[in-house]
Image (cartoon, rainbow, N blue to C red; front, side, top):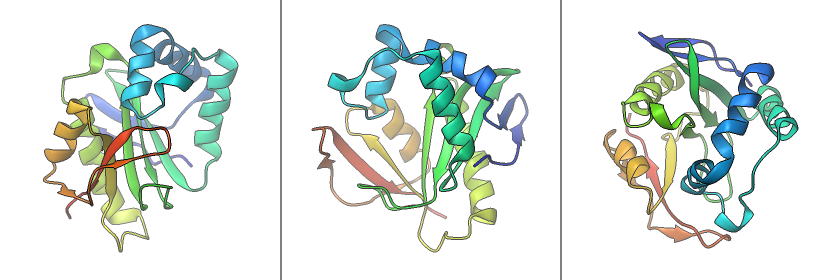
Length: 178
């Protein structure tokens, strides 16, 4: 499902677009840097491979068609640099609703874009997501320092102990305040 457009100055959260975003996805995922990005997002390193344009087109279309999540692409200065989404239902290791973010464009990392996008989405979700009886949740790989720092910058509360998923990856869940 596509989220409504949101904006904060030069940062806009826009609808996914198969033609525009699939090619970007290929660039973000393929190669050594892309594989590390996928690992930091929680993909098992043994299962990470290069992607194709057709695979990325199918993925972006699935964002648009998914009725259990709300997706936005992050557009900075009219250039898409990542994605953010709210998963409305429970997942295997994380109760819903939960928030996930990926800054795919390496050049855009480390400039506060993730935090700005989270602020926009969290503010919108508090007003519009009907099942917010539970706090929004988020998770990060225990060894992903950047993701953990971003989450902690929202005064997030630990949600249980670290755990190891079926791929052997160690995670920490958090509850976002508010």
